[in-house]
Image (cartoon, rainbow, N blue to C red; front, side, top):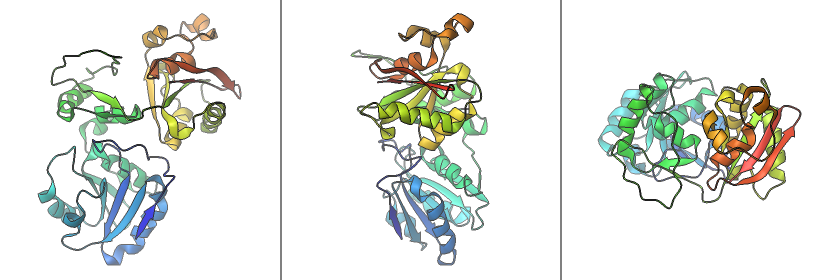
Length: 321
């Protein structure tokens, strides 16, 4: 059984060499569990470029190793572990493996948590499964380097560095992702993680809002501002905002629905890239206008494509590139 989605949904984005995003999924199921496998396809299949169902036999993982970004084993974790362990070589190249039980109670990433397994487990949570994350940063409720890379629509160039930088995340010592615009030559140590953008030509949605703005208000605002450009939702690299707005539920829910990350810039960064439109927030609380400044800061060329526009008296949006 195979499903191909030309217009893959929420979590689908441009593949990168490090396999951080799972797009091509295989559900490996015993014959007696095929109804559950088909239920999973119906429930989350539109979030991926393709999703296949493979009937289990002893060599099924070995036969298809390297063909998929992630295997979802509809089976006991012990079976999946025994059959995939001899195939593992390098975490940056190996497919992710998740197991889920027939009742969709638990979704357990076994390998490749930061390279697609956690993502698939979260998607299975929308069907009622509890995602059992054991990667250190997720267990501590913190955003690891690979998760930051996905939020920025980038990929990790030097994978070995993430051991040190994720330890810094756990110790709250990493700080924000630094941006370096070239051309420049850089001498970097082994504990410096380098991120590279996935898209050659995308845009950033700089966004501010009143407190408590709803998901639908953000979605409508983003759609409206993009209608006036040559870009669409698929061209959005990420949503940018300020740290004082990073916990807005409506913004986070809207970004999740579009399958894009949210990047929150510190006040000093926004001041460096302040936009041209006067903002009352600077008079009242000393912050520059978030939408324009974050759009400029996040854009690859620090260019403001669309100045801020206000929607529904709740959300302001600017477009950067």
